[in-house]
Amino acid sequence: MAEASITAYIDALFGGINLQIFNTPIDLFIEDFLNENYHELKPFQFISLYGLVTEGKNAVTDKRATEFVPKEIISASKVLNLVSALHFKDLFGFDLIAKFNALPFELKEAKRMYDEFLEYRKDKKAGEEYELVQHWGDDLKLNKYFELMDEEEYRTNRTNIDSLLTSIEADPFGLESNKKFKAKQMETFQESAQKIGLNMAVVLFMVDAMQVFDKMSAEKIKATAFEIAMLGTQGINPSSGNNYKLSNIPKKDFSGYHLLAFYYVSWAIAIPEMLAQLQLPYDKEYEMAKQMFDGGMK
Image (cartoon, rainbow, N blue to C red; front, side, top):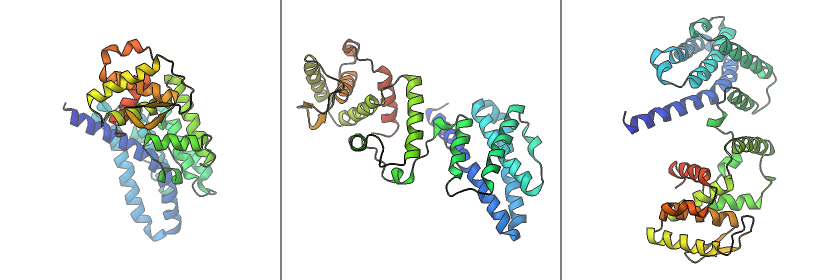
């Protein structure tokens, strides 16, 4: 298949499962509100929900879908659709659950999640529905595909690496940010970093290097690589503050890790055949940085 077709398929798969985990728990509260407050809409609501549940059932039982979609995605989607089917049965007494051909563990998980919704149903505080988004994402192992952010932080979020690192230095413990979000973010980061053994500071610095070198000629990148190598002969302290400067990049002050990241990336681009001789243990960091850079952080 053409690469463009594969990319479109992966994008649709990624977007689809994220939309489902974002919408399913929140829609339960919306449908409850409509059912309780707009009785004249009940016939229309029945038709609407019947169509949505049936569409969800078709999506997770279709032969081609089950053949081409990863099993863990199909299963997670089926569980979320079963939650909607349980809610539909609760509101209107119409049972479509058997049509999903669910495995026992999928049905059990859907009932457990619906019971969790029932705990929030009558006394939910503002914004608590997003706790279900996170809980169910964790339970279905979809949390690696999304991240909930405090709205204010999202609106002021910057993708420029210099600005990001400056903000980290200005507020290293996240005292000015939503503490609950920060705690969750740190927990997720620590788990993922521990699993793959990455130094995320180096990853971000490498993305910064790629952004800088993307605007440079090959000759200047090579000159920068040799300039850093000369500094390296005197030793580069990873924990050093912004004590290093480069004549080829005069507007930047470099910390030790920042300089090491530029060291690695400059040689990877300009002199890749000699990269191993640097003996810098950042191969995994470089691969992730490349993915981030190619994925939109240019």
